[in-house]
Length: 218
Length: 243
Image (cartoon, rainbow over all chains, first blue to last red; front, side, top):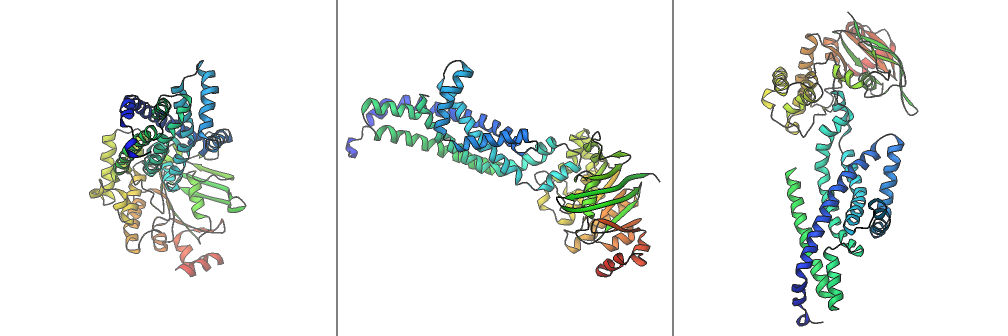
């Protein structure tokens, strides 16, 4: 193929669909970032707590979701978990659920690393002032730890936006799904996938800018 | 004078390493007790047991009659009565000096924020740092940071103050300003337990001096006896090295 053959017309043709797909990508990513971060906090607290019945499940969770491919997790959630819990299959629900569950394992470790990096003396000072464990966490440890977590969260969020392309395999109508459709319709490969790459790049670039702005803010 | 701290037969080990063996000592209301001894003698561990930062394995600690070993005793309540000052200050770096001091009075004691701030300013005046109210801890010198830490502990209006080598991390020229605040506190009748290497402070301010070595109390007495006429050879040997 030469550049002369590059068919901008089919890109223009598919652009409305791919842009709508981009909205889905943004929605799926934001939802998964939010849910994954909340679940991750719970799991990291579990892993850092003393009783084995909190610690072990958290460890097993993290090991499972870090140790198995995201693609496999997406299939498991879509074909097995969501139909059982939801009564029917729904690619969007499955996409957000799978990505959230996966992100939670990684964010749990980010929380844990951030919290562990705060000097033990801070906790002791908080305790010595009569604070409960929860107060020490909320008022003293987390505000300091979050600053140190921001860069790692940034990496995780950017990874998550890119990984969301995998949910095309369960027909969630995001960027990659429409690129594949375009490829199938026109028997072309460069145009659809370069377009997808460019949109993903713009999304992660903007997210990166936003994150480095936040890094300076906190 | 009533006894406010009773330590009896206290045992503490980190794994197989015994740090405190059968330590018994009482502190009376308004008394200043200074604990001296070589590093590794268990004096900091003893102090940290007094507000439950370390959990003892045997014996008993009673703060105003309430046993720390009793599961029904709320450690958080004990700790509001027992202030602590650390070697490394442990100020909260993300909060201003003023917020460091008012955090616990507002969140734990549920004081009115306005009153807590007024009280904090009064304490800052007392330690000579009212101009630093809006500063952040990393901008303070060591001596200033430690004085803020003392003010922060006092804001909870504790009945007892614990000092864990409060001047050991300071540059020599800043030791005096911290000791001056502690002397003032002692003169006001605060019950204090001080772990320190400042023998001059011990001699001048202590009502009683405790000498510890290898996890046990070797000798207890008034500073005049401990420093001028120690009864034990081990006390004498230690003092000959540090004085």
